[in-house]
Length: 347
Image (cartoon, helix red, strand yellow):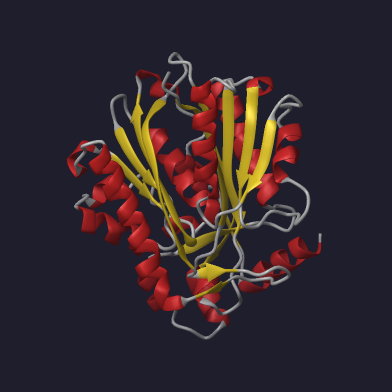
C-alpha cells in the first residue's frame, strides 16, 4: 500500500513589510540588502495571529478544499519553532479547531525549519502501516528576528498543511520515497527564555544549508536512480531566495523548475512553513505525471527529502491558490510592525 498527499492548504498573513522599509529604520541601503537576499518583502503576523492560528487556517483550507472528514484524521503533528506555549500543545488546539478527535494521536514537533516535513514522514508511515486513515502535518511559524539582525529582513510568517492517506482514489501525489540526512551542526539556536535566535553567520551556508540540502537531494535521487531531468518541479527550503537557486544550479536543475515553489522573495522565510507552503504552491499548478523533488532544511541540522509524483487526481486542486493568496496584502511601516510584534508577545 503506497500513501501520498490527499489534501493540502496554506495560510499567509495579509500584512507585509518591505525590505527597504526595515532598512530605512536602521539607515541601511534597502536596495543592496534586497538584492543580496533576493527578498523584496515579507509576511507579518498581526497581533492576533500566531503559529497556532496560522496552523488552524492552513488545516481548515486543506479539509474544506478537498472534502476531508476531520473525524477520520488519526494523527496531527504541528512543527514550529514559535509555538505559542512552552508547555501546552499546539496540536491539540488544532484538533479541536478543525473538529477532529478525540480518537487521534497528536504532538508538537521542533527541528528548526524542518519540523513540518518530519511530521509528513511520520504521517506517511502511520498511513502505510494502516494505523491511521489520514494523517495531518503542519509547518507553521511566526518567525522571529532580532532587530537590526540579518534575520529581521527575511523572517516571515506562514503555514502549510499536508494531509496524507492511502486511498488511491484520493491521492493527488504519491510519495515515491523519502530520505533524511542529519548531523549536529549548530548554526542556529535559541535558548529558553531568549526572545530571539542566535546564528553562526558564516556557517549558515556551508557546512549547514548546502551540505544538508545537497546531500539529501543527491542521495534520494541516487537511491531511486533519478536524474535532474526526471523532475518537473523542485522545492527547497528557502532562508533567502539565493540559497535554493544556488543549490539547484550545483545539482544541475534549471531555474524554471523552482518558479512555482520559490515564495521567499514575496513572503520571506516562513521557517517551518517554508518547504510546506512551497510544496502547496507547486501542487496548485502540477499536472498528472509531474514529478516533484522537495527538500527541507532545519538548522541544527538536517534535511528531509521527498519524491512525489502527481496522479490524475491532481486536477482536484485547491480552491485558493497560494500565489493568489500572496497577492492579498496590506503594507505596514516599521513602527506598525514593531507594535504587532510587541502586542503578540504580550498576549
